[in-house]
Length: 281
Ligand code: SAM
Image 1 (cartoon, rainbow, N blue to C red):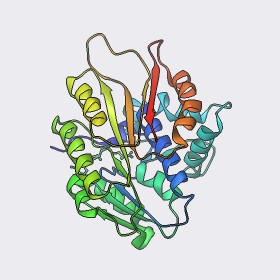
Image 2 (spheres, rainbow, N blue to C red):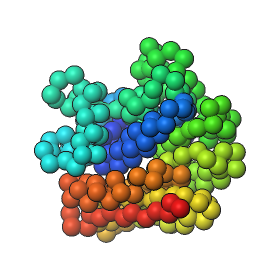
Image 3 (spheres, rainbow, N blue to C red):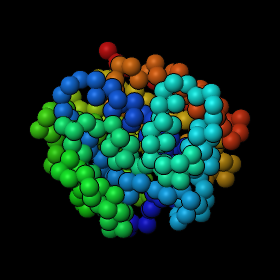
Image 4 (cartoon, helix red, strand yellow):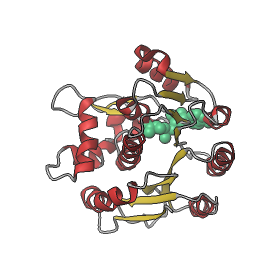
């Protein structure tokens, strides 16, 4: 069943956390003069209009990227993130928001490659249209991203950043991300893996975080950002998390500087909070 369309959520608090961390990881990866692959198992449409279509229906971006766009006191790493969003917008107005493949495209060098998977026919079509001029640097497959990832590891340049960002609309995604990470670590232990997940009041989420910690990765970082207290009726997403395996050693410090700001800026009530844990030997 493919009912999820990311356009409804483009630029919300969860995208901000995910894409900010992605930008930080790719910027760090670029410091070494050796090519790498960026693999996105659930790529979405690539770019989203914020002034029409699905995104305006709930206008989730107003409680996400808009708050940073309008800020004039951003810590330097978040200013870099907003600068990247500005590159996607020709004028002063915020009309477009990049999906993860476009965030990556802004950072990849000519020698790096992107491998994108997107199963939904409409979003896969939009993704192809968006990346049409990119030539052989970008390979797009309309197929299951979990199977696609398996086939790509280890990547030829022996360097890769992998984003795993499923919709979690079906329970089996919680199981599949763990299987994908386990398998990937066996095939290619030195890759950098970024997993996004929603903070929901569901047993599957608690089990997922428990299993992430039991994966046995030597080097990892776990950050969460909630923008409001969990709802009393038990429904809805109050935040999201990023679990990064083999993170840049600089990431904990960057997040220590920026998560308190993000929490304050994006808070909808006094229940907003962040967490940050890491083990980088
Ligand atoms: N990574 C994107 C970003 O940050 O801009 C957002 C991705 S969205 C959360 C999840 C996407 O996964 C949806 O576009 C959905 O159609 C797609 N999808 C769902 N199941 C999939 C699968 N098994 N393989 C590849 N794509 C899938």
